[in-house]
Image (tube, rainbow, N blue to C red):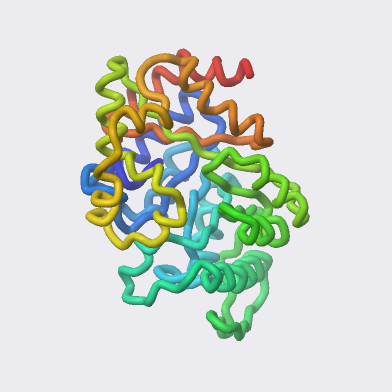
Length: 313
């Protein structure tokens, strides 16, 4: 459920269709702004999750990912997570990360270095975990405080917590403090560092795809809406708005996009994009279809062709 490209109502309809088509799990992005103006959307992810929990019965839900550092205080994130877990009857997992300036600077808070953000994330995890486990939380950290906080509707089932990783520090954090690892790059070293730090949970990856019966149309759409993806997290975490992402990625060609994103109706090309995650030891891979107005076609095609091909792996 990519909030940056679809309306709230459409996201709920899409995840309901994905459940009917047999997808194994779902994730949702948690953005205040889209990456590019051409994507054009950004509804509130937590309202969408509440609606999705009621519109579906089986498919698991997960934030991919929420930043609990600026827009949201950790005590509020814990309340959100507990509520969605209860609404979904235990189908929710809370994915957390150190965030991007794109989404967090809007509250007027200075954007700190990644090292500071990781220290903030440690404190946020301590607060969130304590609240989800029950009881009253009083916390005095360097960055966050909690004063007699408790969840008055605690989760009826435990909420697994995932942490997004991109390097050694975040892998150590995920391995020591999270139930699962989240990453967008199929790098075996990330899994190794996560496990060395004590991590033993699922490794969840993400692959962008652009399905269309017309490959040229798929390439054009991928270039128009997803060319920012190749900038890398060190750049993506620092740019402040869609105009900056547009400028930073304006020189990316359709051919370059097509080299990194499977485009068109060729099932084998999409399967090949998933294989590196399997080779790197990931257990789950989220498929992000580029183009909110093509989700119905993608889901129908995936049910018919792509999911059977992936399961054959």
